[in-house]
Length: 405
Ligand SMILES: [Fe+2]
Ligand SMILES: [Fe+2]
Ligand SMILES: [Fe+2]
Image (cartoon, rainbow, N blue to C red; front, side):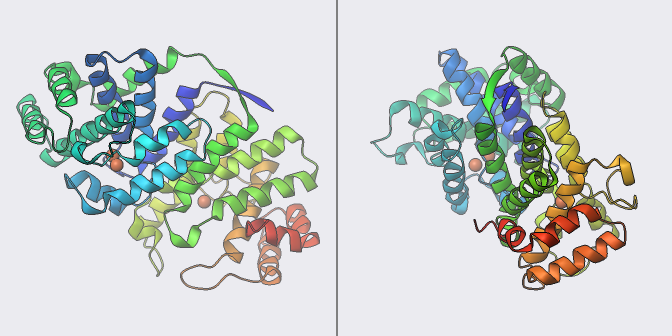
């Protein structure tokens, strides 16, 4: 199928998932995109290049899934381990046709200006250094807890201290000029920033995107989610593969199968907001921790519904923890209120989690997992028709869930 989507809108909405990693300090990527664009305008860059820097700004930290790593990045000016997320981000972007061009810039977005390899094209150096500079401005802003314009003058002075070593002289001068305007700082406030991006999105038209292109974007974000924990590596890929297989066997249309597959890739986006400590906790979660964990389907929906054309995908993704007895979450829907696509997704999600290793146990055999699915369908947690399809195709279902095809 072809999808009519606004590319700016898709990246903007999904970058929200990356910003979730900041937990309370959200919108980091959007602030970096905005500031970079303002400095780029001072430098006289053309509109195509400004667009590019905004998109790269929003995506620059796609290599960060851990809330702990995020904390280091915003509280330390020059953190020793920052290269890890640059490498990872570049590798993720290089696999997506829409974003391949950004990979090299993201690879160098924490490299000092005087250490950038001579062999890099001038444009790449400038773009990487501009992201680096505005990224550090945002980190300083957080460190100073700055609210007054006087504090913001401090940020300008601090950045200037690092001219020619960390940042190019030309870029720093353009930043200092842009940051002289009070409005430069006002735009970093959530409400104004949202308005800025709404205008930017409105100025572009939807375009036809193939399923395969959309899927590559979805897979990249699935990778970001799965990287939260070594135990969930490829969880989302396995869920997507199994869910699509079950949808096909159930007799759903090609369009529905694609919808299920995309919902599956996006279903746990909201987990990026869950603190590492909760996600990795070996023992049972307390009430507050459970509440944080249980809202992730809702948060996935908040992100996805911002994309025009994604209404159905957002809805299905949000319902993956609903159960037929209406005791699931976050909506407490039951029976017929849960569409077939969401029922398929929850069977795939649970089966994958059962057969995959977890910190507290190794993965179950297919037959053991099937026994649990049967019990859950008897308890009205899962749809028995779908559980039966798994039972009748247990070998292939297992292979799909392990993403071993
Ligand atoms: Fe970064
Ligand atoms: Fe960053
Ligand atoms: Fe989930």
